Length: 132
Image (cartoon, rainbow, N blue to C red; front, side, top):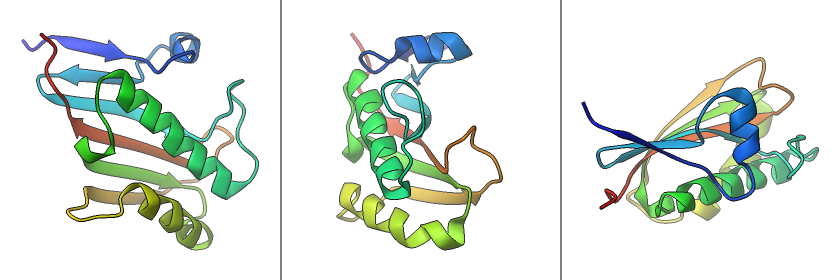
């Protein structure tokens, strides 16, 4: 069985400990990143939608970085939206800042009714260097 290795962004480990999951888990050369939301340092949602999406991408960057990865390592993206029709243009503006050049990762967008007080969440699978 392949060993799993957990990763946590700096200063946010208590959030994951409280809810009983890892920010990211590496198995082999793949990194599976839990859904990242636009939370402030205290865990509360960023009120403005565009800033919430930007902060979710910042939290994603920190989680990827904790495992030695970056946005260029991302293979697959799943995004969750509470009001996709209204939010899509704003989301795409922010998304395109982080994935400006082809080849782009695969992407699935899902409309949902609840994200624990948030309006957006993003989870990814990335190629990751295997630890020695």
